[in-house]
Structures are given as structure tokens and as C-alpha cells.
Image 1 (tube, rainbow, N blue to C red):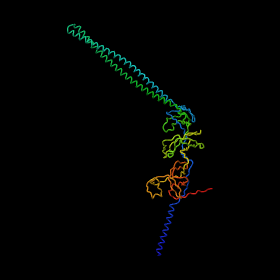
Image 2: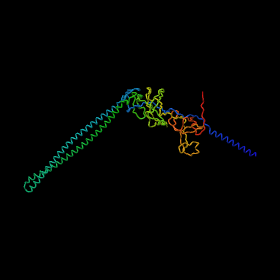
Image 3: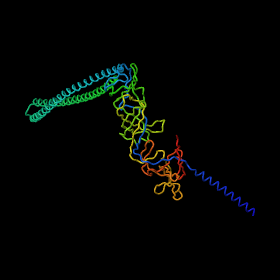
Image 4: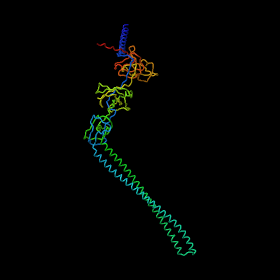
Length: 469
């Protein structure tokens, strides 16, 4: 009996130890989390804003560069001067360009004289062709006359021959008739030869005229070629005088008399002679992050604060939105260029000043709102209706798919209950809730470290605020 008693006592002691251990393990695994809470409240007005940095720029400005190389011989403006469109700003040494223009002009005169000579040759050949046409007509008339004469002499000879055969005329008369017939034949052959000669001369004259026309066209092409070269030389010469392309102020001057102007090339800041800006319309050019650019629209109001003028915020409206991202090789983030036209900018404002812009993208009235930090994202399996299967339901509904849900943790009966929500616009500290919550619901608002690890149905207790003095 004593042995059985000892066994029972040992078993009881072991069970007690295991029970106590299990209790402390359970209690440690379900440690109560101390959280901060807040209320879901209606707010009268919620304003969504986008903030971005940038710099002040005039809407219209020109980085003036030279199109030719040369020494600057005259500079007619100074930095800060006002200029009108077309005003002469500076002159570049024109000596080489003037020589080139004169050479082109001389060559143009030469080819123009060649062109005039080719025109004269055409006129001369046209006269020759007229003369050859006249000669051909004359020889053709002589040929027709000789042909008619041969017909008459042939008929006369045949009659005389018959009479001679009948001994009705003398041999002398017969021989005379025969000689006239032979002479008529010879005259016809000679007339035919002259016609062929006249035709050959006319054909030769026509060939020469065709050649003269070709020479004339060639001369005309050379005239056009040298006129183009002359125009190019004059255009280059005109570029030795640089005029203002717009009305504005000289905001930057990079050259002095005696320095060499170099032709402007891509990404060559040294080629910029000066910057002329139209300061009548000033803009703030900012770079907006890709996550915020979708909310920015034209004509949205904005407030621009210039670093150099912190006490003088300037109002404006969004006037331009870049359609493509600004990608830099040193950064993975993508920014979009946005221009804000400033209304009534102060006189102290200068291009290039750094600024910060605050664009109002949306305004809502009488909306249900929560603190921004209260919103969390959790991943849950979903049921056939697309609703999250939280920890309490996992044993009853089988689902392998996971989906992210935006939501908040409601403080319900000292436990955190995850509630999916739909959100709208965000202000600086609060966010609109369009569905999923009701006014005055108590929700977990912090802190961040606790919210990061908090799960549905975790036990919680609300942190008490210190009263302070």
C-alpha cells in the first residue's frame, strides 16, 4: 500500500508541475498588448494635399547660344538689363564671314554671265534654224521646178523622138531635144542634192540648238546653286549680329568683349552666352513623386513657399503636368515635372530660387475620418464571397488563396478585431473612410511598432495617458 501511495503522490506532483507549466506557457503566449486608441469621428472639412520641392523659373526664357564661332567684338547689354525682341545684344568679328560672302557673290556673278551667254547662244541658233528653214524651202521649190521641167522635157523628147523615127525632123533638132532632156534630169538631181543638203544643215542647227538649251539649263542650275551658297554665306554673316529672340530681362551674362563665342551643342553649358527671361509670368517648377502625380490635375490651387522669402507665401494654380517621368541614373524613384503659375509674385522673386509647393488636390466636407497611422494592411485567406477568413474562421472554411486587405483594429471587449475598410482622400494626419466603420467606434491608433505586429483577436489593454502637471 505504501508503494501505491508513493506512486499516486508522484503522479499527482508531476501533473501539478505540468499544469502549472502549461498555464504559464499559455499566459506568456497570449500576453496582453498595451495599445493606444482613438475614435472614428466626422470632420467638417478634409483637405488632401501634395507637397513637392522645386525652383522658381520664368515661363518663357531663352538660353542664348551662338551658331558660329568667333571673337566677341561688341557687347551692348549688361546683366539685369531689359531688352525688347529684336534688340542687338552683341556682335562677333565678321571679317572671315564677310570674305566668304564676297567670294560667293563673285562666283554668282560669273555663273550669271555664263547663263546670259547661254541665252544668247540659244537666240543665235534659233536665227540659224530660221535661215536653214528658209534655205530648205527655197531648195524644195527649186526641186519642184526642176521636177516639173523634167516632165516637160521628157514629154517633148518623146515627141521629137517619134518624129525623128518617122524622118519628119532633122537629127539636129532631135539631138537638141535630147540634150534638153538630159539637162533637165541633171538639174533635178542637183536640186535633190541641194534639198538633202538643206535638210542636213537644218538638222545640224537643231542639234546645236538642243545643245544650247542643255547648256542654258546647266547654267541656270549653277546660278541656283551659287545663289543658295550666297544665301548661306549671307545667313552666316548675319549671325555675327545676335539679337534678342524675346522681350525680357538679362538674368545671366556669361561672356565679355574679347572672349570667343563657340557654337552651341547638346549638353554644353559653356556655349550659353546669356539667359533672357520674360519675368511677366513666373512659375514654380516642382518634381512630384509618382505615387502622388495621379492626384494632381490642371488648375488645382497651390501655395508656394520660397526658401529665400519664408514670410511671403505665393498662391498659384497648376498650369502644366509632365507626361513622362524624370529618370535619373542615381535614383530609383521617378518624379514628374509640374509647373505652377504664380499669381502676383513679389518683386524680390528671382529665377533659380528654391521653393516648396503645396497643391490642394481634393476637398471633402462632413466625412468620417481616422488617424492615418491607424490604417494597416493584413493578408488573409478569402471565402467564396471575397471576405477575409480571420483566425477564428480558419478551422471551418478551407481556402488556399490569400489577399491583402486595408483595415483597422477595433478595440472590442479587450481584444483587437480587424475590420476591412475602404478609404478615400488623405489629409496631413487623418484619412477619409468611405465604408467599414461607424462614428465613435474605438480603434487602435498606435504605436507603430505594436500596429506592425498586432493580429486579429489579440488581447489588448488601452494605455492610460499620464495626467502631467
